[in-house]
Image (cartoon, rainbow, N blue to C red; front, side, top):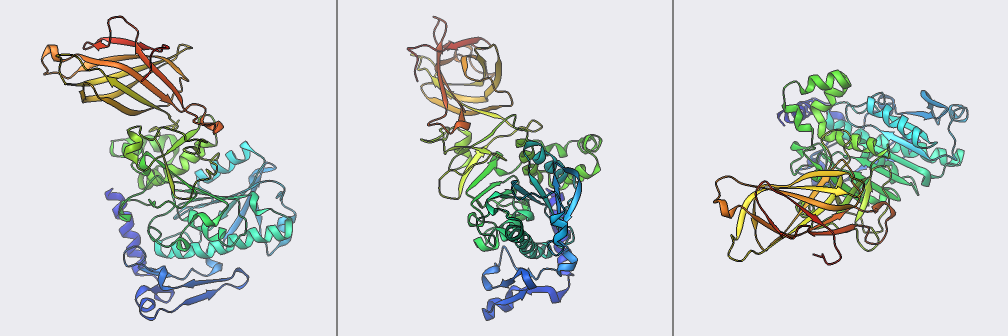
Length: 511
């Protein structure tokens, strides 16, 4: 966290020495209520009005750097040239006509973010994976001339890059027959808002995917200052570095799309805390190289959205997000229902789809701390018995092993050193990288907390219910599998310490 503060302060200091002629301070515009405007030839005009300022969230507005300095380039890759770039320039129509661009194919635009380049490892990896999964035109938007510090200047440059991208898409529409509905812009950080600025000027743009959209100077601002659902027919976002204070996270908590995913509540991603352990960065350097180590050191949470989206391209495990009012309710399993038409369970990543619900809905999910990051979710409900004359509560750890019909087993800790009140029903959300399908039995191991009187250590469990993700991808009605288990033994539901008790399904067993 200290490193994040240091980086932000360095960038803020750089802002203080930037060319004052290019700066638009809030005070004069707030007082006069005027409108400042600059036009960029065929691209159109940009305006700065009082509503572009906020005393806390956006104190300054710069004008973008000159076009010749930002120097936006459109780098084309197709299956015919998966590694050899072809530069497309609308001012030189031959570069487009003689390229491998085919307007009949779906087109993916990749837009990098702050202090990033088209040549970074993740951009190359995403390009190749998009070509692997389908015959796409993949166009990398290179704005490396405008993404450098100070950050405030880079945010201003995004508006001009958005104009450049919009003009290029419209040029392809008018001169090659490209259907804007077949265009999908994938942006990271500031690149997410570039996608939004482009989308508001391209009628019928198909889709925008925002990978942890940048928060500073966009958080709590009006929709036209940032990415919003009106910028494309479908806008989806993955938030991985949100914070109530913009100094504590590079991303934004505000929903920006038709559907917004918040893995692990959108912050403190598992595995990123490994940076606090000795030699962790050395391991990353050895396995991933210095470039990746630098990215992880400064912005592990912020970049996790990229990693999750890349993994979704593999197609081996669907990231299922569950709609819920808040993360605590999600963790407690209170939202584990896919809804009447499956709209409450949605896949995050390349296969995300519109839900038909109003924009702004939040979908939560858990991820692993290392690859594979995808986890399967399951809600476990334990109905505790009410022993006559027995203790009202006991403390300990409940470990559950789920068993499938084909012999697979998954052991997970339901709780650790927790208080169990007899007669109550406890619910918790479980997750695992392994999918055991539809469990047919559950085995419970009870470990009583030390220090309790011997005869007060037993735990009585009447029934166990398990709700799995089921066939969520079909969007079928109420696509959640449900199983209820009762004690297999005639000894009943009393579980002694360190004893394994099996629970099985039966016709008479229901919660």
